[in-house]
Length: 190
Image 1 (cartoon, helix red, strand yellow):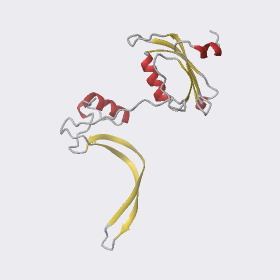
Image 2 (image 1 turned 180 degrees about the horizontal axis):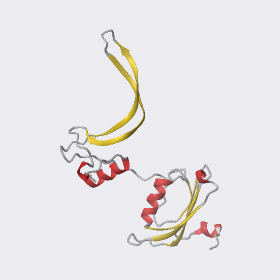
Image 3 (image 1 turned 60 degrees about the vertical axis):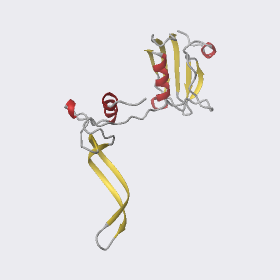
Image 4 (image 1 turned 90 degrees about the vertical axis):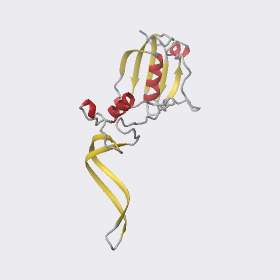
């Protein structure tokens, strides 16, 4: 298939071209586009990213148009939109840059006590605390605190100590797994 830049920039459905100030380019070429939400579309995806230069990634993607737009907003936020021809309005700001997808806040609800405060428990952490005041009776006031190294041991309810994942017999120690657990175990308000 020959690539014709003039034709690409005209009006082919699905064709999208983004570029970054650092020299990255992301191109979607619509191969088989379905505008309705119940059918997938097929794209040729080409990306040249500064961190992989001179590498070039070329692949075909079969996905719903809405999911491709979500992917573009998550991965290419801030990139300049040189061409947009997907079936929905281009998500750009006044400078022509891709705007990130709105992020929804999740609420943890403890299945044991219904409290909403979640804490992360870490192990093998080095903590450095600024001492702001030392009193002659031995009392100390602390200022800023920094944490180095360490790993997550578990996520738990601050109120009752319920450990998320304990019912599944596998503790959750990764933040993405924690988010997925909250999505599937804690009802969210719309």
